Image 1 (cartoon, rainbow, N blue to C red):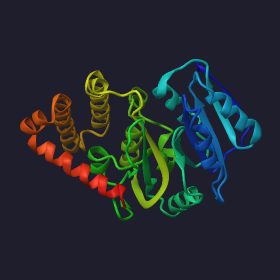
Image 2: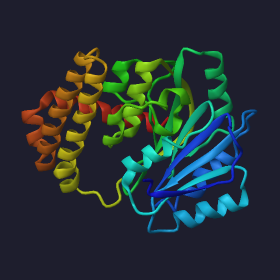
Image 3: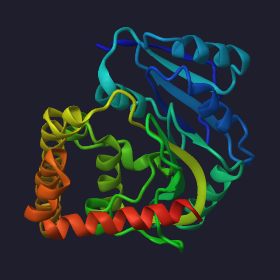
Image 4: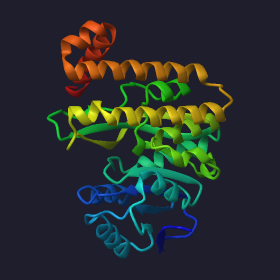
Length: 309
């Protein structure tokens, strides 16, 4: 039995479903929705929002937009807070049309032609399951300049190695064919890494194209975080959930990508040890994990230079 109610006043059978997860996003949801409404496209679309019973004004703001633009919206209102995993499954199960565009409630798009460009690519390239693009990362809670999500300088196909071991796909850049999520694997709903699970499934189903254009903003929050929360139980929990996802995917694909997955696991384990040492002292991190220390330092330098371009 569903734990939500639906308000659906939008057009029927749109070309694109724009799927938005929303929880405690009252500060950001207007920017997210407005970035959709500004789209200049020849394709019809419906904005489908799954609101997870937020304690702030997120729901009220969404309902205001639904009243103002009734032909644009389908709203999924959770009766209680069900968490991002369940909310994501409920959102995707309510998709419509041929294509799906993903947008988190605290991110937003910056190019009014974003949807037109991506859907046009998929229309012309049937063997591609998804097309994505670059994004700017903005940071909240720390004093850090915006950086670029993907350091690539050209449009290119995304390999399975890149998805498993690098993760270069901003979630708000994902536009995919709806037919590939009609039968999502049962383990999808058990994974907290929903964007990674989706990308793995889509790359195994077809090709993925990265467009070297910056057309969205990804918001990374450090508000309320600490060394203890980052390197303590949170890291252990995230690692367990990531490995669970990789094991599910490995089994589903008959271990076709086992080598890549094992490389990823070993890298995560080494990084966890490194960050634990780093939380104690930089000297310990350098002495016991010099190779990782140098790599992380190099990555930091590259990121800093990119932010100044």
